[in-house]
Figure 1 (tube, rainbow, N blue to C red):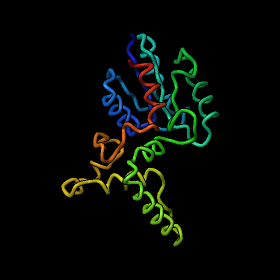
Figure 2: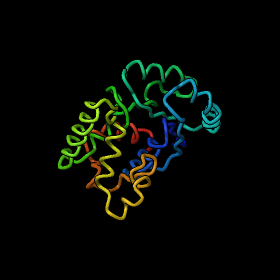
Figure 3: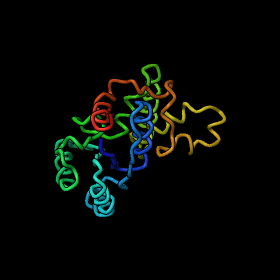
Length: 196
């Protein structure tokens, strides 16, 4: 099996995927954040890493957000990455499930255990209230951050920016994250196909 290098949008994606790969007992992989969703900028900035991966006969995988149009995004990503991915769309996965519009945060919100989903209703109410008085409400990233913050212990709250920060938060607590959720099956299949 060849060595795999996985490219992702940012540090939050790297943090989540590296912990998820570990939870599946798959081989560790190199994960390289590309630095944002703008393909032209990050491909240009990371072209050397792509070239090095190919020169070292590594398999290149890419996991990005689908955003607002999964089909167009998949085609756009593939067209940018055509020189680096040998097996067509099979080496590209788009969050949340490689068939729907969305992003990493959509997947994370789906991983909240059922018994804690009421927290999301509270956050939506608070966000709606803020919008009603003329300010910007919470987006998906804010909701995930606030959810994680609500799960911190007293000792952890003293350093909330460390524990709730998307690039450093832990996904290992099964009372906070359900890593056995059906929502993870598409990502699990993608990773196992290339890393098992």
